[in-house]
Amino acid sequence: AGGLPWSTRRLTECLRTGAREFGWHRRNPKPRSRRDGDWLIGMGMASGIYDTLRMRSEARVRLDADGTALVQASTSDMGPGTYTSMTQLAADALGLTMRTVRFELGDSTFPASPPHGGSQTMAGVGSAVQDGCDKLRQEAIELAVEDERSPLHGVDADDIVVRGGRLHAKGNPARGETYRQLLARSGRTHLETRGTFTPSGDDRYAMNAYSAVFAEVAVDRRLGLVRMRRMLGVYDVGRIISPKLADSQALGAMVGGIGQALLEHTVTDHRDGRIVNANLADYLVPVNADVPDLRAIYLDGEDLHADPIGVKGLGEVVKVGVAPAIANAVFNATGRRVRDLPITAEALL
Image 1: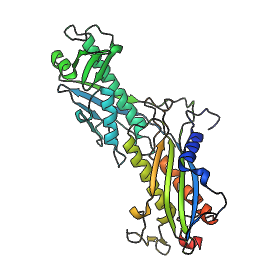
Image 2 (image 1 turned 120 degrees about the vertical axis):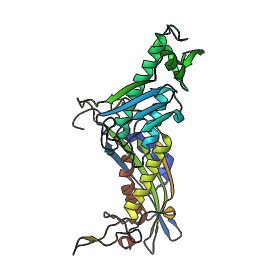
Image 3 (image 1 turned 45 degrees about the horizontal axis):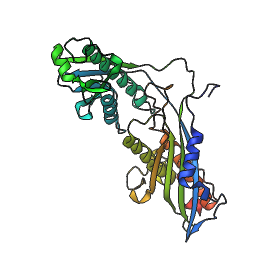
Image 4 (image 1 turned 90 degrees about the vertical axis):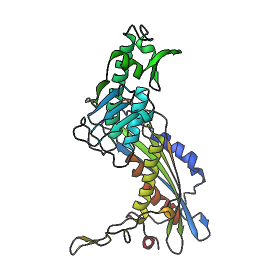
């Protein structure tokens, strides 16, 4: 870490939580000591680390007179659920329901965003969206408290809550009005703000996301076939914005890690550089029958040194420890230390 203090570093907690939940105490460290018929059973684990990347981001936020909001940023969505997570973030910050918020992306005329990679989209774009929505919500509140015709006139701005598109006094829900009523009375067609996020340039902290992955395998002692039995991942990735999308990332990474450890292998013909198995018949990937019971646990917390919304990003740290955990489980089952991937049957015979 270059002598810098960690922003958060809860790897030990990941390890302890995983060991408890996975039943690590039942593991015999002596290889080939546990059997189930012709199957050799092994347990292994590995830890993972990934740098917390952040780049300057911008977002545009507009609240229309009909009480709906539009949020725009030039980021993209290759599958982790950026549309959904940004909509969730904006709806929460604006005090709206998700169905009244629309998030648009993927257009270079929208406010600038970093490349969609490096587990940084939520940290950067999400923080810009949060900033823009906070500014707009505050603008609406100030418009209400300064308007003598508003039920909220004279109320301290800090004592106003926005829920379901309605502003009301804290502790007195009956005293309030909707965004639609506020904009109609003031003659506004919309309110618009621009959110920004610029990561701190002083680099006072070392920032990383962490994981601990636990795996159990069965290896046929005669044929050398490896079958996954179960897997658990425990993660220190800061605040979780969307639990379902986090599971999609983590469980998907476990499936990908099974492919990396046991199946996927690109064969090159060195005479002409062609890929011999460049098709889904010969290039093996995990299917349902290859995937065991998978579980992901996220440590509750946030990293506000990293960004205002406290996230670290989990697109890639969830993959880092999977193949090593499987390799260690294979060693525990067979006593054979395989250091080349994929782990094939011939490597274990």
